[in-house]
Amino acid sequence: MSRTLLVAPGRPGAYPSITAAVLDAPVDAVISIAPGAYYETVDLADRSLTLVADAGEVVIDATTAPVPALRCSNGRLALRELTIRAGDAPAVQLDGGTLRAERCALSAGFGPVLLVTGPAELSVSHCQVDGGEHGLVLEDCTAQVEHTKVNGVSADGVIVRLGATAVLRDCQLTDCGRRGVYAYQYGRPTLESCEISGTAEAGVLIAYDSTAVLRHTLVRDTAGPAIVYGRRCRGEVVSCRWENTAEPALDVAEPELVSVTAAPQVEVQAVEPTAADVESLLKELDAMVGLASVKDEVRSLIDELQVNEWRRKAGLPIGSLSHHLVFAGAPGTGKTTVARIYGKLLAALGVLPKGQFNEVARRDLVGQFLGHTAEKTTTVFESATGGVLFIDEAYALSRAGAENDSFGQEAIDTLVKLMEDHRDEAAVIVAGYSDEMVRFMDANPGLASRFSKTIDFENYAPDELTLIVQRMVAAQQYDLDDDAAPILERHFAVVSQAANFGNARDARRLFDRVRKAQSQRLRRLGGMPSVSELRTFQLDDVIAAVS
Image (cartoon, rainbow, N blue to C red; front, side):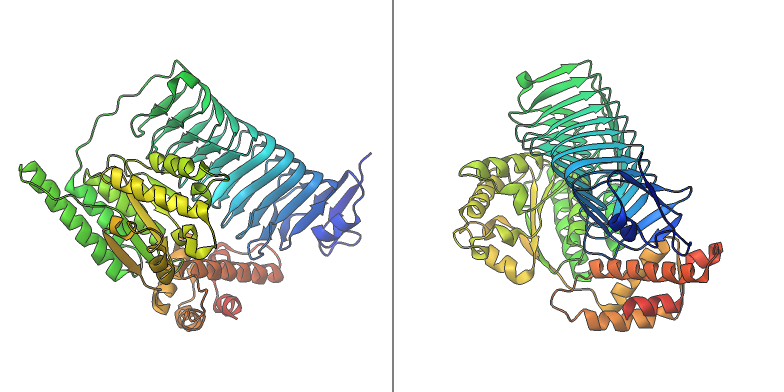
C-alpha cells in the first residue's frame, strides 16, 4: 500500500515544503499538497512518486528560477491537479523514465513548457499548456496526449522529433507563433479529432523524413497552409478539414508517399489588398513603444513598394526590389515583432502571397553531416516561400564565430544562392548584435549585396522601458502605484548600462518580480485578499523588485 505524505506549511505533523516531503518519501509514495503557492523547484532522480493537490489549488511557482520547476530523471512521476509555472526554463522536464500528468495547468515564460527527452514514456490528459516558446517538445519517447489545450506559445505548439512517437487525441492548439504541430528528424505524430487554429505559419508541418497520420482533424485561420508534408515524408490524411488557410491548404511535396482520403478543399476567395489593410498594420507598428527610426525606415520601404504597385497597375515599368533586410541591435528591442509586421505588410501590398512568418536559428539550418546542411537550409527556405524567413542570431552561422565551422558556412553559401534565385518569392531577415552582423556580412562575398538595407534597433530608453512595464501591468489587469514610474526609470537607467542588458526582456523579468513581490506580501497578510488588493501593485512591491 502506498504511503501518503502531507505538505501543509504551518500545520503540525505535516511537511513544510514539497522538497522536504520528496526527500523523505519512500518508493511509490503519494505526496498530497495543501492549497497554496509554493515558491520552490523540485528535482527527482530515479524516484517513483505521485504529487497531487489536496482539495484546492496548488501552485508550484518557479518563475524566477533559472531551472525547471519540476524535473524528473529516469523515474516514474505522476502529477494530478497541479498548477506549475516556470520562467525561462521548462515547467516540467522529463529526462528518461515515465511521466503521467492529469488535469494540470503548465506555463513558462521561455523555452518549452513541457520537455521530454528519452527514452521515456509520457501520458498527458485534460491539461492546459500556456506560454513559453514551445508547448510540448517530445524527443526519443512515446507519448499520448488527450483532451489537452495548448495556447499562446511564441513558436510551435507541439514538436515531435528524434524518432518520437506521439498520439494527440481530442486536443486544441491555438494562437501559436509558428506551427501547431511540427515533426522532424523521423518524428511520428498521429492526430485524431484535434483542432488547430490561429497559427502564424502552417497548422501542421511534417519534415525531415517524418511520418504523420491525421484523422478527423480541423485546421483553420492559419497564416500558412493547413497541412504540409516535406520531401521524403510519409503519412495519411483522413477526413480532415481546413478553413481560412493559405493556399494550397494541403501542400504535399511527394504525393505518392501520402495517402489522402476524403479531405475536401475549402474554396477561398481571393481578397484584393486595400489601403485600410496597410494602414491598420502601420498603426500596429506605430503602437510599439519607441523605435522611431525603425518605424521611419519601414514606412519608407512600404511607401516605395506602394508606389511600385501603383505604377504596375498603371502599366508603367518598375524596378526590381529586394525585400531582404538586416536587423541589427541588442536583444529585446522588437526585431522579431517588427519582422512579423513587415511580412504582413508585404502580403497586404500583394508583394508576397502569404506573409507568413518563419523564425529559425542556427540549429534549424545546420545539419549533422556533410551535405545535410544544404538540404536542411533549402527545406527551411522553401517552407518560408511566400513570406518571411527570420534568422535570429544569424552571426552564429559565420566562420568567424567558430574555427573550421564548415557546416555554418555551407548554410550561408546555400542561403546566398537561394536568396538570389528566389528574390521575389520570400523576404529573408537576418538579425543580431550590430558588431556581430557586420562580421557576418563578410562570411560570403555575395552576402551583403543580397540585402537591400540594414535597420538599426537602438536600446530602449529608461522612460520607454517604464512604459513597457506599465503596458504589461495594464494588460494583466493590475494597477500600478502612481509613484512607481520614477523608481522604474532610475532602475532602468542603471541596469541598461550592463553589457548583457535585455531591453524588453528585462522589462518582462522585472514585471514578473513585481508580481512575485505582491504575491509574497499578500500571503504574509493571511486570508483571502479583496479584488482591489489582488489588482494593486503597491510601491513596496516595486521597491522589492528593483532592489
